Length: 101
Image (cartoon, rainbow, N blue to C red):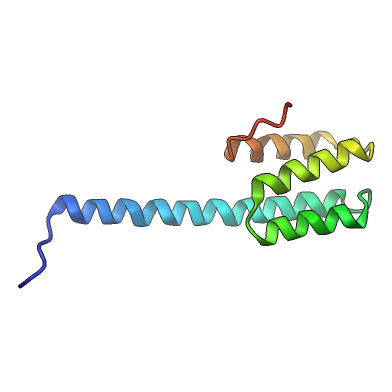
């Protein structure tokens, strides 16, 4: 018995594959952006905080990593630069996070 293939089924499979590719690209961009932000703040952060954020990024816990990084910076009295704040805001919007608790 031959498999039935319709234009709707093919389109749906294509859309799912494209969504997965977009999601994968977003994850890669988030990972690169988070690591870059972490590197720019790392000299001021406690080593333990850096390690926690690295572990979260490694485990694809990007939202938690961003929250942890911003909370650690705040707790340690680190003032983020304007460009760092813009990047934090961009990533938060991409992940639909509200960091204004």
